[in-house]
Length: 258
Image 1 (cartoon, rainbow, N blue to C red):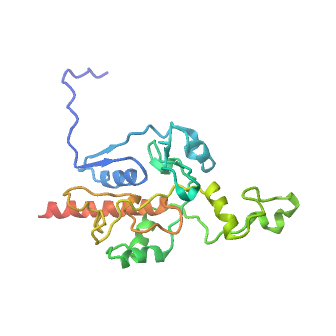
Image 2: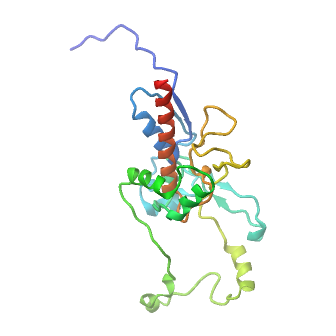
Image 3: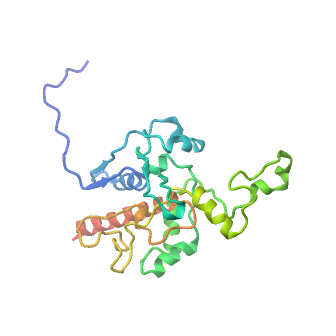
């Protein structure tokens, strides 16, 4: 049996090489990639709680995580004229993993044209051939869909007597459907672009995700997308975090070599 040491424990370092605000989809990936270097100290800050609720781990659980104050910030939009003056819920993950912990676990890269358009807007290194290796590096599985169908109208379901509930079979013209769209319209929780990258005066970050006018700060999440992708945005956010980690590590290596 070893005697307990009378020496006080060495204090833990209070300094970090990188600070990451938000342990959401991008923040967690970024922290993992950067901290893979044992010489790097990373501070990851998250206002939400642990991802303990079991609904987080299964795709069908998202209706129980969205709108739940334990896992969702439960934001609302301002009243929207196009939605007949309604304000609608705007789910944002209030938990470790952020929105990736409360979504439906749908993985879609988007289309090659999405990223080629980003590059055409002046964002170097963000074309399809540039981002595809980053997607592949982080993928353990892939699934998705190329098109949608009117499932309820399929002959195989005819014997169940399925009927359109809302807005119903009657509204057919644009004039008839517009009020219904205002009554029923909602978001599918894919906000992007408020800190978009670009070369114009309205862009917030450059194509290496550096915040313009502020040294040492990057924005690395879905908000940097210059245009939304053609599908769910979680997979592109993982890719953005991967490229962001590459930028930071390359910059760090450059400083060390100087």
